[in-house]
Length: 119
Image 1 (tube, helix red, strand yellow):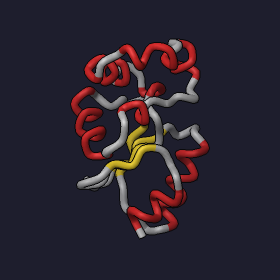
Image 2: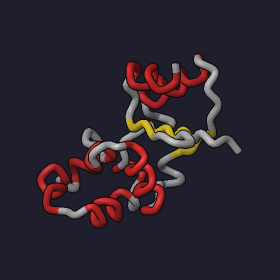
Image 3: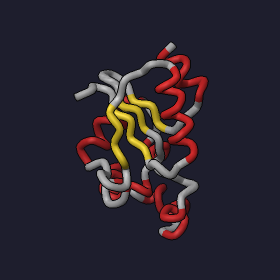
């Protein structure tokens, strides 16, 4: 089992670009389909801590589920525990791709950030 996990939604074009980038740069990883195997609360907490990002960055703010639930107006009133619980209910609420390394987490695919981390 690889210590690098690439969490993605296979139909997402950004995830496809990120996967291609990883393969192009010879980075080994295990793929995890976020829709079939949604992150649980403990994983989300750990990844959030490792990422040094605001928790809001873990939400797929452009997704249909986020918009349907009107989370833009609700997240500010929710504490971290409530947000972790919500994220753990549906992989489509979670920003992707997520790359989990041994001591870091990247959320979303911004090529310059990935270049900095890997190259």
